[in-house]
Amino acid sequence: MLKFAGAWKSDKPLADLTPDKLVARAGCGMVMTAKPDGTFTGGTDGKNCPSELNGSSYAVSEAVITPTQLRTWDRGYDADGKQVWGAKKGPYLFDRKD
Picture 1 (tube, rainbow, N blue to C red):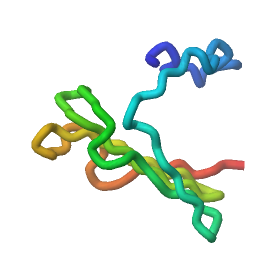
Picture 2 (picture 1 turned 135 degrees about the horizontal axis):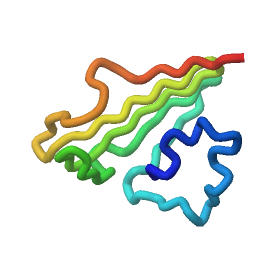
Picture 3 (picture 1 turned 90 degrees about the vertical axis):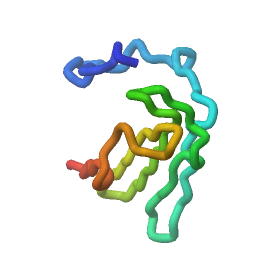
């Protein structure tokens, strides 16, 4: 929701966000798997997450969560399988700060 863009500047950025305001997108849920080393890996299921952003037909999301880092890679593809949005070389990396 664009309403929350830049909300990190607020003292209580998500104070107005409640579960009833969230909408699940069919096919866009991410399945995560716990690994023995304490990491979680997963993503969306193939081409099952519909998207119309920037001419895409579907979106693909992947994530890796470790004790010290979050890696996310979101991409959109057109009907021919050509990537039309998202990072091309690899995931965004978010390092944990104390």
